[in-house]
Length: 370
Image (tube, rainbow, N blue to C red; front, side, top):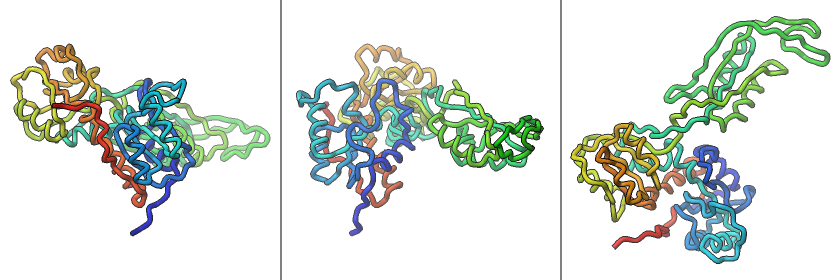
């Protein structure tokens, strides 16, 4: 049997955050490294929904010194850690046993191939798109370079991740004009001479990129641009980023009557209980989904034309808010997110095929049904 690869924690974190950047998490969240040192050597990772004391015990038994959870064990600051509740006891046990805890929560919810994509997959939805896209996550780069170098600079920016708009890539806008400059003492100008104003035919390149890629984009620009002093501007855009946001909406392959759809949810999402509103009498074709507590997306689901909205944690009066316009189905918080571990597992196995990654066998659902 091949020996399992030992990883540095920072490498595992880098792989997860390339898929679900921390900048995508909500302001109230606490995703990221909860306990542990990024330089720590990792012998194995245990994947779970909730990092509880039982999960830490399982990690110890399985020789895993990294727990990767969806829900952060700490949401707000701890003023004391003396074991008075399950959160403090879990943290104490993890630290005593040198076990790192990492969480990817709303950042994993908000990526288009994250938690909601897994619900859509299990529910048989196709042609999915983000229900409530986020704004302020895109930036625009504008730079100027000699015409003969424009293609090289553009290609470098594209390879670094710039220029993607929906299903299109290598997108840019280019205008030819001329620039002027005078090189001072001690310079080594690519074109022109010191102390003489130079006029150069240049291309203005404009392209967009996700904000978290800024350092990578600038590195590509500086490496390929021929000038000693690179002229560029970066703007934050208010445009919606259709690849990132809350919830998903998709379509069933064939329309289903409401009770058939609800029964299929119970099977596909492995839930013992589906709470739902009065039947609307319509066939179900277009379905909106949101893992966890998704009531804040009800208006978006209705305005999108969805026939049903699948989520969790709906309060009594929120069922009234559907007003007969949409079928609401509450499948349970744990049940809506229980397949999240598959995302972590597939991601890490693809990136590090000889690294020991295990899906937890511990059921952390705190809710039981009769």
